[in-house]
Length: 242
Ligand SMILES: [Zn+2]
Image 1 (cartoon, helix red, strand yellow):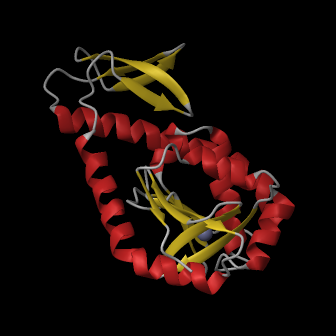
Image 2 (spheres, rainbow, N blue to C red):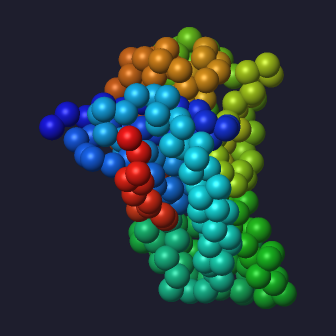
């Protein structure tokens, strides 16, 4: 049994490819952002895999769209007893509407207090603001640690909700953008995204050099990336390839 992996960009989509001792190519789309993973038999070369992905693009796009809609539908109502994640830990929400806006964590409880006249949207905004603050506070120590290692510096970090990305970088302005949802994940995942985006200041695409640099700086980056993504939303086995 042997495995190898690669990273391809097809039609603007980043695709993880894992080579396995399997017969048929298999495409999966993972929540929450629609990461695409392809399990491919060893015998397929990159061109054949690219072709398979291109042919399945309408299916992949449809899965990603459904995933983004599903994400909206499962939005929490911020009721006491709901589970909410903070830095990878599952906490129980305890919400109260008898006070000034305040969010805090105590043990396994996430406390949300808002004024009594706040509606759902306002209460959500209070919690969102807190997640963003959490994320912002976590970034400077990571930059301090990783900028000298990667050998690149950013001018600005923007925390911005993005539908399909955990992070992105603008090489010209040397700014990186991070998704506030990262504050719900294990801090190891944020660290991975920061290193990934810093590495993009050296290599803009996910080419071999990019993978080499990631392997050099953060040998366990694949495990961290996988931790960001849970079970696949959709799988499709695709056996008609030759
Ligand atoms: Zn990237």
